[in-house]
Image (tube, rainbow, N blue to C red):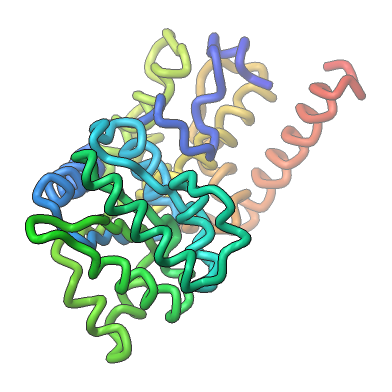
Length: 303
């Protein structure tokens, strides 16, 4: 790939939510502050929503890495689960033995007993659900019932819902009004501004080991911002493809055509408004470059 070509230790624009690449931009800093404050004040339900690719899963990982030791965490990354499956997942995260052999009533009792035991040790349980918009309504209701558990002084469990905007639409329904009223802290992740995107791209290159001259100048950032709409995940895809194009051409610097070809080659990117045949041609060239680089990497051809 282009690692050694650009003097990198690792790929800077992968889609894996790697917390070592976390960039402390205002929007993500504020979200973490909301989560931290809500947990410190003992709130039961906390909600963070954002469009696809705005960094929700990375925030989950960052929070899990930095949460104080007096919290016991249960992370549910894919909550498309029935109430029974959800209870089993929570029991597994809390290391409850033989949970699979228990009926639902008994399992609920065992989970409640474990929450009380943890509370008596001076600790609290945080259940963190990513992609919470996928939770069936019955499972959301099961979570609400867990949130009822409390001592005279504090909640036994804190629930953090991370989800796409569809989660807000679901919570707006009359059937879920009881749960909605229990959400005391919420935050909406916005997309990045142009200056923020520039910082984000520069930061990821630095973390990956890049030490050369600035790779993304203001013009390149502008085009990337327009194509990605400020969505970090989409910006990663475009930046990666642009670097691939430069590498395929044997250059150590980017050209505007690399950015524009990457935008045209990416299905979800916003068009940049140029003549369609130009970007069709550039996109085709980039596609050929990607295929050739992949073939070279597998030893099929020599470049």
